[in-house]
Image (tube, rainbow over all chains, first blue to last red; front, side, top):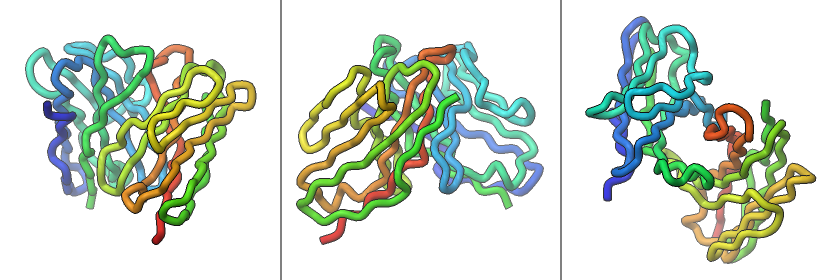
Length: 116
Length: 112
């Protein structure tokens, strides 16, 4: 039973380019969360999605960032016109819809974005 | 909002016991979580407390006092592989109650 799969694991972009990060949740999980981890900082919530719906994007910057979780395929976090401050590890997590009380999240290994 | 504090680093000896503290402030508490994160890897779930008291799971135990806004993670019989960051996270009862707010993590180094 594969865990949460993220790719790419490492991504290097120049300022102004676009970054696309993909996440496939665990089998049977329909809730996806994206968190960002800056160096020496804690994980920060960005967005919560269910299939074809953005439930809460309150932690995501209003500009340049977008997320989707289509009916088919992985969830995608898209960062347009990247800046150096976007350099971070982006973690995707998923949870089973029947486990809302424990709130246990299963994390992927993260995508590490470096902006030159 | 929420504020979570935990020590930045700790060092302990193999075979010993270590306690990692976490204090939090939240407007509507709805659960406290501990995650373990090895360098460069995914955080993995360790424990969940929503009521006061001690939850034991093998070598790891987690304690919660809601009135004090305080939790600790207790690791017994430390092994070298326990060297990792330990993340305290709180869930708020308000809107977005699925959101976890994480502390910066405590980096534990286990030495021989």
